Length: 279
Length: 252
View 1 (cartoon, each protein chain N blue to C red):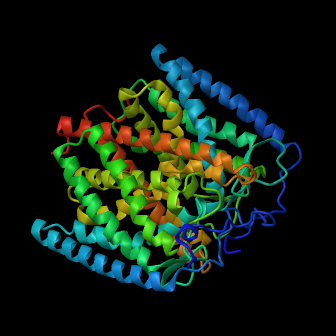
View 2 (tube, rainbow over the protein chains, first blue to last red; view 1 turned 180 degrees about the vertical axis):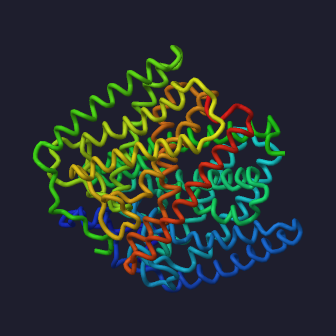
View 3 (tube, each protein chain N blue to C red; view 1 turned 30 degrees about the vertical axis):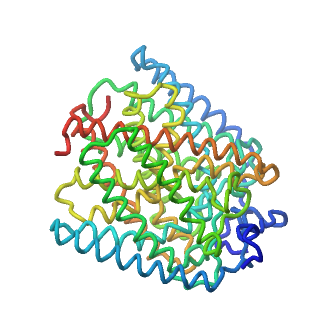
């Protein structure tokens, strides 16, 4: 761990120079960076406890509602960790390798703690948002929820970033306390998008049951790549490597895309609710 | 050095004259299709149709990353480049191609159709067939190629490519058509590339994971492709039911 709190969030920026961009098309990760083993153990323990609580709550909800969707969402959220490495590659996030790993794609280990945290982050939020969608949500309410989630992510990530459970590297423009607002803007958008997709699919295919939620959620999760497509194009360009200030453009464009997507989603949900097409 | 992507065929080259021929042909095709779309569109929809085509061209921003993730390669000797990102160059003719396929496709579905379509599947099959034909021509001409364990390749074109692209155009058209009710028409410039990129990303992730996994083989990749087809089918059914449930036909 770093000597002082001020240095704790400083991530060495990997060198772009010398890499072969064809074989290594995305920014090089700080592979030598190590997580704080003590902190990693604490986070893993907390993640286990929270995931167990989340799963139990989902099981309880499933019995209460006589609908397996909450449990399926919980399990799917855990399995959706396979998509995480693709997102990490394109916008420069890295999990130091000295943690209990769960899966490896693109030659990138993803710690078990993150997969467990998925089961805490996604299912409750999707179930909560589904209830709000059911009751009718306004655009203002959706944006308030979005802003709150951005702030929550920022505050929540302070701890894992401090212990370097994960880090953001290579030219992120806005990184207070190590948190990347490139990710901070895109993640909650994907969360709302996933919730809307799962909710709408359940409504569109009433006989599809929980199985469709299991298919829809990872699809919507992968939509993250599309949401951040423009930002990724800039972030991974040689021009941005030479002039990191260009990444501010990526940040602004990403924000515009997210706000626009949420605005249309809110209109779609409001329209469906108004027309009572799903009831 | 941790990335574990399959190495692209860096020695591949675009045959002499093919790039300029492709650029000329695609520009003419784009111009012709644009004229047809504008001619068929209602007067009030013509600016929107033009914006859709520009937005379709902007969809090219996703292609460099897409090329890495799905193992498509534009030979490095292309002379006219739009941009370079993720270690991949995107040539100018691909911009025309995207403006034609994504832009004109979306514009056609939004602005030029005069009948209400109650079934999206014929539209998807038609777009997929057009895309497949265009891909065959491009691959056979050596303008781009697919490498790695690509399953179900026909004449060098994996079948998931036309299917996912066609579905993404339909999804993009539906998304933009809806957004036009409440948003300014200029939002089309963001809406088309955003919706297209999201729709493609939602479908291609299994094949991307399979193609880039170190233990990947034909069986793994084939299973992933079946998953892609299932997701594409679900996507179309979803869009169709969403449109029908709102009582407005599939497309405006």
